[in-house]
Image 1 (cartoon, each protein chain N blue to C red):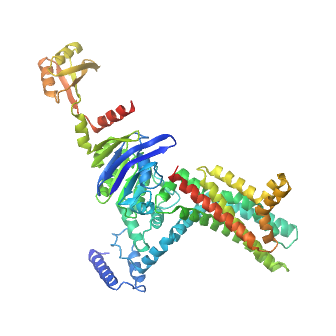
Image 2: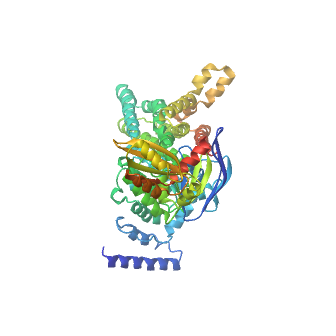
Length: 313
Length: 306
């Protein structure tokens, strides 16, 4: 559905993206993950025909983004990062304008607008002035305009940026629903969001793709051969606890920090996968009070931080 | 509507669709059938969209010319002027100045049955101050609000956007101009010897000058995201072109100053105000209009190679 080959874009001398290559099959929901300024928006703007590229090629639904821009734009629904809307218009009037601009034939307009309004949960707001809507509702109007012309592909630039937690969840659910009928690319710098909504993640940093895969697999792949971390909260004398913990086989490093009046937090790093049982047994047999045991699994967040930090240094 | 009734309606529609599909060119039937469906309150479940109708195929044909998109953009811009304070300020200021200086001062106080006061306000004030006020937001605001991204990622050609913006603002200008016809009527009723030919030629000239001025304003607005900057660029350009004969011509040595006097907008407008609509002057303003709109289109397109 979407093919990107060696895409490079320079702003003056500074590269925004370099040699970005990926493809998205029909129906996939792809998460574009990266810190701010990594090149997510640039890639999306090129795909939607808003700006050109320095070199490389891209196509949507078999149409070249540069040579057949109008055909591509007819088939893409786009929500820019800042959710630009005409504030003085009413929701239904705005959607009607978008229908006209995107060539929805007159006989289908009413049905398309009604469907977009329904899928974005805006039934109650259809005659309200856009400028008076809350951030979350604006976002829904932004999504409604992106789907109103029945595009094959949806490109959403940071769809949940600036929303409160409730609105974020609603928007995510909405995107998940839309993902059943459209090919979706969404960008985000929030990992849990991509983990929750996307089948596939593309991590981009400093204009280059640094990882590509399913969210779970990505964490697994990068997690193997790395260090694990177990945290314990123990009641007892700090020095005695440290000695006991160090005696456990497999423990590499131990850090002890005071936690409250008579307890300590012990952070153990190890190469062994799960030391929780051995550690808790040792602590209890040593006569201390075990208050808490926790293993921190390597999340996508850690993968992301490791990858982007390595690139950055 | 009950469930059964809805089902019935849908079935009826389906048979209609089939009938339509069987006999394609049914232009007289087509516009009637879908309308019934569309009149429903939209909160109810949406009926499956009907098949392509005669109106739709006409629309597809029309769509290739770009006109539906031009008119959609123009209409939005025109109505936005009535929602925003700018439109009202411009219209109010215009009516105030025209009636104050153009009519009360010239006709009532000056005791002359002439439109020259009204036209003077238009050429001296509307053209160089109010037109930039009208056009300053058209593209600069889209750029700063980000809605330009929305427009240009829709299947809208660059020239369609430019043309739509121009038509919207020009429509407002023509509307303002049309309000001054009231004075022609008043003079016609209360005064004799009014030269309607001369007035007609002047109006033609003002429409042409306005077309060019609005186009230059749109161009200025495409250059920046700041409306104030767009306003001053437009005003500077308009003053320069309008008074080129006087301003530049004044500083340039004799053979060259004739050139500037010749291309100055004011000098090209003079024949109209004397009652002659010469082809070369018409061509001058039409060229100015298209030239400015062409440059605007190039400015919009420049985002692709920058």
